[in-house]
Length: 323
Image (tube, rainbow, N blue to C red; front, top):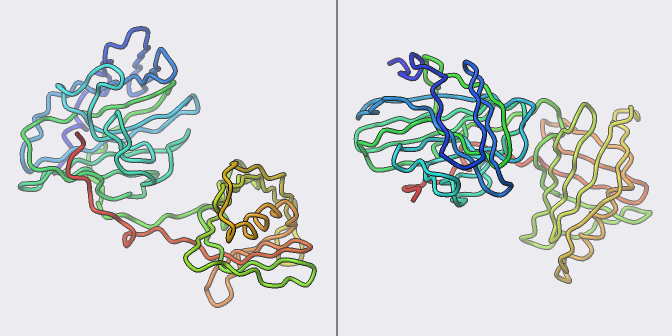
């Protein structure tokens, strides 16, 4: 089966009628923007496809560097394509959203410049399923609706401005099952604190049962990371790799900033420990025994973390409705 969108004119995009919004199409390049901050602008491809039972559609967009604000990528029917917050459809923007409200939070990363986002609609008998893809990784089926004769169209939703390239490959993705995340470097991603040591003699700091301290490394540019540490509050800092120190990467950690919630009494020692991240001077991902632990060390603090693996076993049931 061939993707019917692959033979359709990629330049036939229309806006939702929002006053002052902008839309320009040059071949497969789409540039559009909302007129007011906080009020989104929607554009959709005018495709005459009936999407009958047993059919499928797939398209993807590659985001340009001009992205300002947030973008959601998905599908909409002609009757539910309306100005601003009035549009109702099935969108991905890091969360699953219907164009007005978040329906499922934390499905994947928020799309950023250079990312490629894909949307795959499959009609199988009495079900209509929509799966999402980010940089060739399948995030799984987000919506599984009862069979409907409605035609769905590619739709983009931006609060800000965006330039992107639209494409519709002739072949469909090989899977709709959620795939594990992969990273271009050893540190990016989420890590769970397993052990914490503090003081001049590095005594172990107990982690209360049931408490999860999560570190998230995001690569900002080569050898520069944004690090957040979630205890009760979320602490943020920057981490720069400055060289080598024996088998470790030598690092420079910037000052930590924090949200201002009062933590429970039992979490205060861990909060203070997390705030000491600015004293760490080396880190490594150890592969001893294939464990792959993250170790960060300072003059009076050390932490050992294990990678949080996000794979198909973490998938949740698809949403049955977007309304």
